Amino acid sequence: MSVREALDDGPMTRFRWGIVAVCVLLNMIDGFDVLVMAFTAASVTAEWGLTGAQTGLLLSAGLVGMALGSLLVAPWADRIGRRPVILGCLAVASAAMLLSSAAQGPVQLGLLRVVTGVGIGGILASSNVIASEYANRRWRGFAVSLNSTGYALGATLGGVVAAVLIGGQGWRAVFLFGGVVTLVAIPLVFWRLPESVDFLLSRRPVGALDRVNALAARMGLPVQDRLPDATGAPGGVGAGFRALLSPALRRTTLVLWAVFFGVMAGFYFVTSWTPTLLVEAGLTPGQGIAGGTLLNVGGIFGAALLGLLATRFALRSVLIGYLLVTAALLAVFIASTSSLAVALALGALIGLFVNGCVAGIYALTPGVYDAGVRTTGVGTALGIGRAGAILAPALAGIFLDAGATPQNLYLVVGAVFVAVAAVLTLLPAAAPVATPTKELT
Image (cartoon, rainbow, N blue to C red; front, side, top):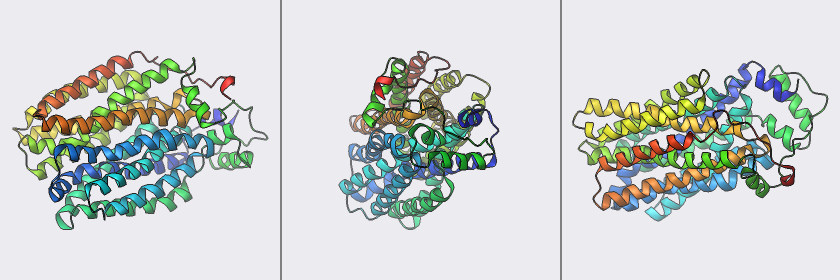
């Protein structure tokens, strides 16, 4: 039995769950660093007198960076390793967060949010791939969904920390807190996160066999006397991108790109604008932050529930159900603000399902691609998704300045989720892993 077969069929040991736990922690930090702008937007807007469009651009700035990180940085994890890319991106994100706490104007803050996003984009793609690669076949969907739960946990803590720090020290303290936490994660990752076995098997760096056997011993897997035959990984980053559109992968890749674009657009509109739009609909600023926080509280359970359902049912079917329920909840959300209790309860439910949608597309993607292009495939899909995430908050600010109501915006986003569910039916229920063709090696 090869190491890869043993990983697929062997038990989930404490060491393997520990790797997943580190990836969950990384996603918690990313959730905080990404959505810190959503929770500080009202304070930043008030201090600098920004318009709705300017606030929307600040909310989108981090997403621009995440797109760049997913498209340009994450693919290098297929060339130099998942672990060094994660460590480098943590250093970049922590430095940018710390500098953001001292920003002197919206342009400076916006540029620093782009840099922060570059780091986060590389971390998200690589950590989700590692969580998938170290999970066995049965628990793989749950492991990646659990990883996404970390994002919601971090965003939830972000809301709590923001509410406390903004009231006492102001919005700058929130960025300072995030920068310190991100910096502290670097030694933890260096100590507890190993390199991907799949990367070692496909790229064959110096000492690959010894490193694979050391990891196999820690997981109770059989030691190998030689590496298995090479699978023909693409020779460069450009070849990896071309492999995604090879005949074996073209249809699946295009469907995934459309799904990522729509889900990310809807998700980031909801999570970025909900605190502000709840205030527009008549709630107090404190109630608006509470509503935004409950979105992420619901997301903690939504991603985990989707992962558990994926151990019993086809992941694609579960994800389609999540998309349709999210659309229905969004259609009635803002109309419920006359009752605070109902609005907050619906907010928690929306968070449960919309975060589950994101967890679902994260879980769906790694298994489609061979190890040689896996992070490239996940990173590219995330980059396409970021395009939707960038447009949605910015367009929402423009539409609000033009007189659109919060209810109209939520109805439009609900329709987007319905359209994504329809597109997802074009993806095979169990898309097979396809390796790049020899022409691309």
